[in-house]
Length: 187
Image 1 (spheres, rainbow, N blue to C red):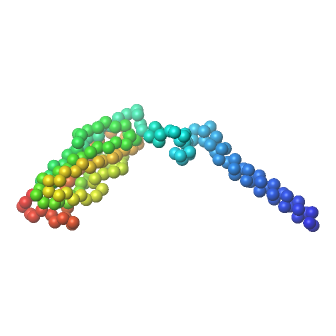
Image 2 (cartoon, rainbow, N blue to C red):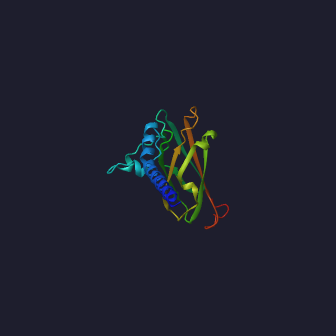
Image 3 (cartoon, rainbow, N blue to C red):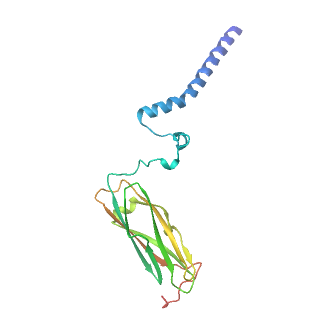
């Protein structure tokens, strides 16, 4: 009986050793299989070679085969200046782009306002992805104060090919809340 137990323990030790070896070999096997099949699912830290900059990476999601013109429009409902620094840009779908908007409070009082975006054509709405935008929150500006705000966006490469121009239009409204609204008749 004791001999049978020792044989069983020996077999179990061999099995545990084989399992450990197989688990240890899985990482290099996984890398080789991914490389052979062209699957690139390793984390960025595993992909980088020593001394390489992260900024040298190429975004493979950018559709370089076409460009889309993005036009910028600004409408202000009140006595303030609100405009994009550039009227239009040409981008490749999938490319991250930043455009700045300028705002200036021309009033002699503090005001709070928020921008509401709209898109044309309407089917572009679901393909226009804003990563950062001043329209996400309400802003308070003192009398005469000027600000520059970014809109960081990417156009989804799944945008229909017949859409070659998108207009992003913002309407800037004064809002009450933290700061009282302008008295009626003064705007």
